[in-house]
Length: 130
Image (cartoon, rainbow, N blue to C red):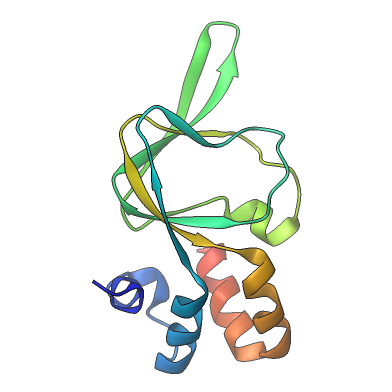
C-alpha cells in the first residue's frame, strides 16, 4: 500500500488537505527495524520523528534495576516528535523488541516545506502535538 494511503487511514492525519497529505507522503521514508534494535537512545541528537507502520516499540528508561518500560507504542502512533519540534536531545530510549516498520519524518526535508507553507505547517504541528 502506498504511503499516502497509509497516512489517509490514520486519524492523526485526518485534518490534512489531500494536497498537503500527498506532499507529506512524498517526503517520508520507509525504514525496517530488526527485532532487538534501538531506534532512539536517550541523550542522542536527532530531529526526525517516526510513525509506527507495523509492529510496536517500547519506550524505556534505564534504572538501577534495569530497563523500565514507560510506554508500549504500536501501529499508527508517533515517536520522536518532541525532538522534531524542539531539536533537543532524545528524552528516552526506544527499543523494538520484535521487528517493526517505520515511516520516517525527516526533519531536514520536511521543515523547508513547513517554513514555506503555513497551512502545511499547521497541519503537521497539530499532528505532532496530538
